[in-house]
Length: 346
Picture 1: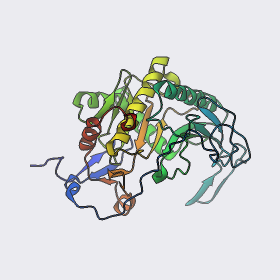
Picture 2: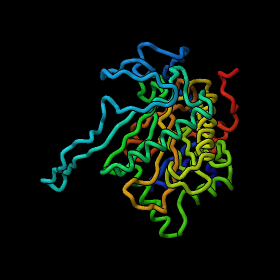
Picture 3: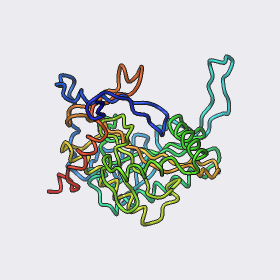
């Protein structure tokens, strides 16, 4: 008899329309592949050579103020520029390109060089949530900005060369491929049912509970049914919020709390500074109402079996479907089982 905890199967991602291959029987195989060096611990609150620490001069020549809370500035080496001539190349139906404009900003989460979100106080993370909200509103109100992407790459494994706690915001004219795909799926579900896709999905997860990692009054963090990365997580709101700007003060505090809960459990899993890429998807900022949209936050960590062993997306994953060994239910159980207090807190 088929057992999803033992036998290979495919799972459908209702949010993107893609499939993922799950191979739980492979969790028993020995590992002989590459092992990573764990991210180096930072033990000092200030680094004179860090471009992001208060009072230091960045690579572009600008000196940071002596900031005391979260701090945002224009990226000195932006991938998107605000002044780009309108134009496109379409001299062949198979060769199409369009100009793209936007704004890129860097957000320092804390003046302290030695902290991560898992180690910050909830009230300090709430200040960051408030700043994210201000940035979403400010950038989204600008002419020609239709999408605001807030994200963080944490750890050397994820390509982050500076350990100072920080993230980025890219705001642009086009809605990128991933949120656009989600938007199409959300709209189709809303038109078919009159309900939002992620509110229906949230209720299923709350009822079944086997993929829940942690929750509070306003939010729940789950390993999604369709997770691709071993310990992937999705933060969902318990009421419809199209964007950060829909959150009240209590929900901002609860979002800060659930982020701290989740990232603390990540660190405790292998007793390391757990690397990940994380980011929020929220309603486009073109002025439409988007009743089908639900704000949500993705976490994509690469670690698989230990602080030194990560998942590689290669071969089959590049050419066919994403594939995972550990089932989402197993991953959620492991994250639930670890302490909610950070292992470095004593």
